[in-house]
Amino acid sequence: MIEKFAHRVEDIEISGIRKAFEALSGEFFNLGLGEPDFDTPAHIKEAAIQALKSGFTSYTFNKGIEELREAISDKFKRDNNFVVSPEEIMVTSGASEALHIAILSVVEKGDEVLMPNPGFVSFAALTKLAEGKPVGVPLSEDFTMSAEAVKEKITNKTKVMIINSPANPTGAVESERNIKALVDIANDHRITIISDEVYEHLIYDDLKHISPARFSDEVITVNAVSKTYAMTGFRLGYLAARDEYVEQMLKIHQYIQACASSISQEAALAAIIGPQECVAEMRSEFKRRRDLAVEALRDMGMEFSTPKGAFYIFPQVKDEKEFVERLRRKKIIVTPGSAFGSLGRNHVRISYATSFEKLKRAFKIMNEVVNF
Ligand SMILES: Cc1ncc(COP(=O)(O)O)c(C=O)c1O
Image 1 (cartoon, protein in one colour):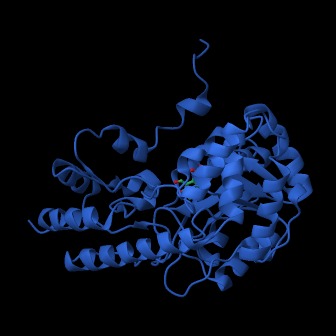
Image 2 (tube, rainbow, N blue to C red):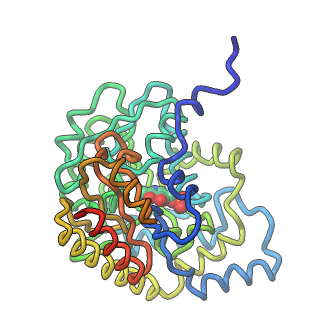
């Protein structure tokens, strides 16, 4: 009998993060979601309003408007230390679309895609949609992805390695040395790197964000304005790669998306070329909350690796199901660790993208739940 739905959709599940979100009603402490709680800075909203007012509401070039691609090219030079021409940049509907078309353009049926385990939910789901095989790389104690662990997972079917630093759900940040080692392995085995850098500006302490594209041409760099400028709803991301990659990805983008929103592109332009103080302010508030979370979890006697970036902390718990449920009864939403891969089991992801005061109250309640 012919089946109604394609295996590619039947084989993936609704994200565990969304499930928790959709179950919300009434007053909750939502420590489950991955988006900044800040309002989009005023000058960025103003650029969107101006785009609307001036009638900038039609399709744009498939790749995105030229000014924005030039601004992104300058940004890569300024922030990430690598040179990429505006022609090698594509503007997408969020980093989500960029990841999707990057994976679709290189992964064939049965190809293996290395990814951190635990790691961001989309990596495995998008790989499956492309009929590839997600291969989770077990992480070190501090949740970084070591070159040795990657090496053990390489086979003659390995096609892609996904690097995500700073990482969701762990907050881990890869060092320059490790990024170089990962790039070397990828080059030795002719593996394309997809580097998801959406949290690049949310790094605390003295670490620096390092883009693999600094050291290799075989990298598709994925980024977005979503997290950096509190613009998740604008759905505006971008990617950079050598011509031959962009040529293939553009074909997919053209048919599944046509172009990113014209209004959001104007807003993203204002974000990238405008004043960057808003980013520093949000980062410093996130750091304050990270410190609060670390202290609170330590006081509760929980085991965790101190996150160095993004806005998540990923402590161990005895039984994640029970823990999540007990918190839910107290109106606190956190995400079960197994939503991020098998090795995330018996952890929870706590997002500190919520106000300091709310976080404080939530941790107080959590303390009672943990130590009851
Ligand atoms: C690691 C990572 N990559 C990509 C995305 C998606 O970003 P966007 O909202 O720009 O599609 C997220 C969102 O949570 C993320 O955590």
